[in-house]
Length: 328
Image (cartoon, rainbow, N blue to C red; front, side):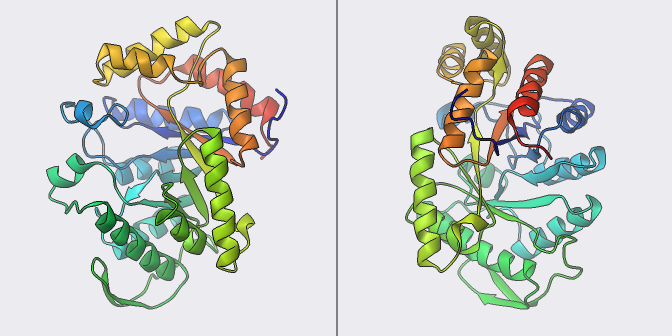
């Protein structure tokens, strides 16, 4: 386990699709009870299986709304940090989003993280009547939203007349329970997204290999210094695919393959996805993969967590969290 980062934390983005409400809430309680660090809903209106757009277009099935799911998580937990990974900027007026987040921060006793991203999935937008501009437009919308949200969270009176965000003397009262409710920005683009992270975010969530994440972290550091901000003010997280822990890699691959097929991924693609993941296999292999992310500057790894929720994997990762992770 050489190179393990003593400060690495573990969280879960729990899929709210193809699952009964009670099982979803029980999963939230199980994650907290085992001592993990964060619990996230996601912001999709149609179920997905990975990021293959052509596959996702044909997947149907039940899925719960992310912020209402998050409210359920608040009610079922007492300690763990909570958030939506991440809210797409085009789905909710930013003033309303801040009011929602502030309300849940009070309801949770000050545990909420407000996550924002540009929104990548066209079907979610178009299917429910939201505008889906080209990437530059989505990034413009995200940046305007982040500026408005940051101002409201900071207690400012916000007036904006932007392309995407319009406000007139908006205020957020009551303020969040936390003195500074953390704002997380998700995305890894160095030209548009990371400068927004460096200027406004408290947390960052990226995706990629350890080498890619190390490069993004270095870019954030440079951008913070250019903006006159201490890079240590930004908590670095990475989104990781679903883990599956078994004594043998083949057994773990088989199990995750079946789970992904159950969510609509074609069997051949599901097996390739499971077999290509470094967090599918024996616990030692997963630990080494996490160690590489810790060495890349990651403070917390956030796993996708699809139902049916695998208790054996959760128990194994809890052992890893206790033995190698930080204390609370």
